[in-house]
Length: 360
Image (tube, rainbow, N blue to C red; front, side):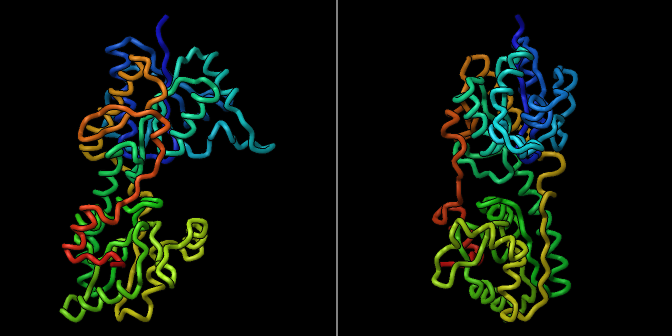
């Protein structure tokens, strides 16, 4: 009997998702002769009625390499172990396993970030559903892999925004604050900030002192550089008065109450900086649009390797890239957050370029 393998995308979208679907499907169909079943809207396509699946054929995925988003749709509100229903949240993981059996789907290729990979691991451990994971996040914050597709595309969007902000900032002698994504990490901010010649880069891993940021802007003004470019990651916050970082339990509340990282920074600089300040929040622009070539390539490699893992019966693993070689690791090691190391070479380069990071 022909093998039937399901594939789905979960969590937030990222440039390159379609390239993974294409890479997996073409190898699965052409090399191994399997049927590939696309599952719509993450696990929801199997859990909700009517079921939403579609057999993916080589001709149907041939043109999607450069497409943004995902042809299968995605959601971050479909955890089968804690599924939202009108009568309350329920564990529908057993129902999911039953549906897979009815559909004769042997196993799942699950493309997603840390939350999706944790769900995939539980499905295998607790419900016996064979899974292979493919890491996805524009934040590049999964420790199991050196790089995630979508990251370079997000950095390119942020860098282009910085290039544009430079000219308008200089024309009006303003301080331009660009807030970028990254959740609790500063990889996008650091890479884009260095690529876009930012004067200040603020990341969650280095709680900042607003006085240092103000001093940097004032030094530039004294030298006749009457504008400044500041990049702030969405999770970056000022240090507490005693220099400690904000407690993890308080971070989300503090960010929401302050209106986001950019607004919190501008409020902290009010009265310290003699210049107009403007904030630009890129938000979901960083997720949208076509993937850059490097993300298309990485996503294709990930998709093809996922097919090889399934062919070898190596379930319970996540594809990753390490030292430019694509291989895999156990799913148990997949969903660990990778933070920016404050002592890393990249942070050191930023300091050498005289970028203010808000702390010693």
